[in-house]
Image (tube, rainbow, N blue to C red; front, side, top):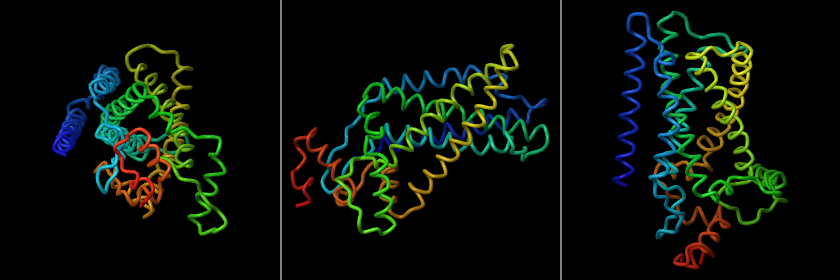
Length: 289
């Protein structure tokens, strides 16, 4: 808990420093654009994420009394750095205008400020994304548990059918992630990948003479990817934070734990998997005795 508090404190401090730096740069004479002077930081952020992952000791899910560890500290860190970075990118990016959306801000210094805030968001986004990617490569089973199975579509229909009150549907013991979440994960990965690749092209254009056709193509692709990311983000907020049924899992993104009763009721298949990998887990914790 102390370590988690330290991580949160460091993140808050970094966010405060980034905001202060972005504001100061935009307020200077000539309103400095960090995309012009700080491209090195964007290149460095992925390497910092990968290095941090190599230094991270992961903790597998396990039953701890009347609670189940669902997310270790690394999962919480990668979720919030990527998530908050994404939110800031969407807000600042939409404000700057894209595709058919007009620019929502006016004035050179205001534009410079929003561009600098977008820059700061890129740093957090890239750190969180590459921290997650490196952690996943070091333990591929964490990636596999996100992937849809052959039952993705029928199980998703049955899952939401039950939520809507259709009694004819039944569900097998659910794993850690629902099939609907696994299908949404594919959209998130595709949108993130396109945003990262096209974003690097757009940043590189600030330092090198890149052919206009490439920059225009990257810009359009970046904007379309933003729409995909926005769709996923809004759906994620609704299903993961707004619906009361999701609040126990949302709470675990802060505490790391869900209650044992919640795990038994909603993720019995996952509890059974924990039993297989952690022999010390009481049989009663899985069977609900």
